[in-house]
Amino acid sequence: MTTFIGIDMAWKIDGRHSGLALMKGDADQVGLTCSPTGANSLEGIVDFVRQHSSADTVVAIDASLVVKNKTGQRPCETAIGQTFGRNHASCHSSNLSRPHATTGMRLVEELEKIGFQHDFDIDQEKTRPGKWVIEVYPHPAMIRLFGLARIISYKKGSAAQRRTGLTTVASHLRKLADGGHGLAMSPFFAELLDRDVEACRGRHLKHYEDLLDAVFCAYLAWHCWRWGAERNDLFGTLAEGYIVVPKAEGLTELAPGV
Image 1 (cartoon, rainbow, N blue to C red):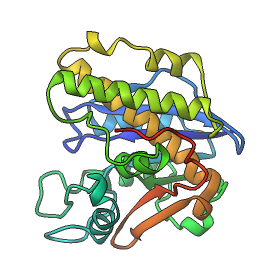
Image 2 (cartoon, rainbow, N blue to C red):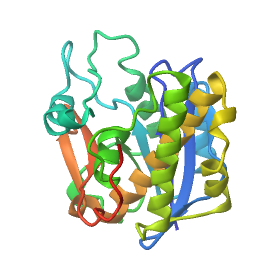
Image 3 (cartoon, rainbow, N blue to C red):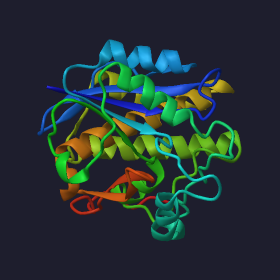
């Protein structure tokens, strides 16, 4: 049994909410094994990983884990924009002149202290044992896995628009669980998907967004571990920054979103 942890990391990691999710599974199936939670500090995230990781654990983080460029974009971000810009799934620019640009690298350094490796090689990751870390980005992953023409608008806009978007994200996650894509339904997962989004107000709405993203990141950790280069693409390089995005093959039966 391998452990998969998803982290939707806040750029300003201390004092802001980051989503956290834990899944466990094997090559056939993965499932959410506890209620998604959150942390408001770097220390809190590391404590969660320390408490829940096993000898074989993959951590997928929605954050820039390698930033070497002083200005502009990382090459991987430019490549994502060239591929997914028409889907409105381009990246924010990461560079050393921006506030909190090193937050992801700080997190990696702390995880390395508890036995994780950040040495990603997509050709070697299929069912790789041990404890390792990868960078993911939900928007382009959703484009491919959910068969979308453009991103789901759940991060911006009015509260009503965000609630509609979050309901759509939850619906597509349910389809992953119902569609034979290796994601199992569980009581924890069902509770998350069935939450009354209309009742979410203020920070609780943002927290729900973070939790859904974290669950999706945990699934992306499993997807990378399960399939490696066979069903995942690598944008960029470990040296200059990279993002792992699933390939679309085998998932086209999911209904297109809006």
